[in-house]
Amino acid sequence: MRQAEYEALSLRMRHGYEYGETKGVGFFRAASLEGMSGLIHGFTARKGGVSAPPFDTLNLAFGKTEPMDAPKNVQRNFEIFCAAAGVPYHSLCIINFEHGANVVAVSGADCGRGIVRGPLAPCDGLVTNDPAVTLITSHADCGAFFLYDPVHRAVGAGHAGWKGMLGRIGRNLVEAMRREYGSNPADLIASNGPCICRNCYEVDEALAAQFEAEFGVACSTTGRPGKRQLDLEIPAAVQLLEAGVRPENITLMHACTFEMPELLFSHRRVRGKTGDMAGFIKLT
Ligand SMILES: [Zn+2]
Image (cartoon, rainbow, N blue to C red):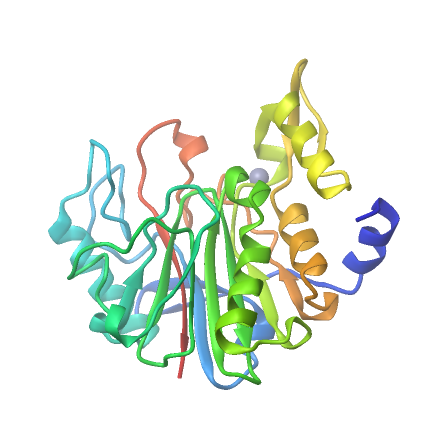
């Protein structure tokens, strides 16, 4: 996509987020999705859970490497999350992310995977048309994708750091919904979630150059010598637009994980182990 074209389309997208708390649990939401019937969605804040530092308090990931939060704390946090979000505990289906771009279609038969049953095969994106399933993604700086097809009644969710963005997991989600459920990209309502922002995300020049080459638009700004400041929201939007999502139907939240320590975990901010927030989306 050309720079001028992106800038024009960006003006037609929605920018910003809504934040509210229910039963002590905070949720970031996209106004466009919140305003539609037929689904619930959100991205959790770190408040209201039971975990101790550095996972304090609403850590919603079991972790794969030491130090890890106690599983009983994470399970309790998911119970607290479910009560606040209004979703059944046994409806949860948790992504098994590997910083790839693989998308898996799930159904009611997959409820409980990654929480009360064994994990899914490695994947960074999930799609479903089954209202029995709550799709769950895990984040602590990495971007999120939320997708809703109000015509064919289907949803998608994704996790994307720089690898997933370069791998175009957003496009892969759109294609999976088209393939699995017959979704027309022009019908899709899309949002990202909170993620580390350009001002806070320093990367090597070579990585930034990969983004410019892949997406054709400026995805970074100048930084320290040998470094660039990378924007994860621009490549998210570009790949949705190129996949056929209408700019009016795309929301970029512009909520920075690094800059909101009271509300959001950030791996970069603490330079070490921290908890994870969850993105969720479910048909009702
Ligand atoms: Zn920031």
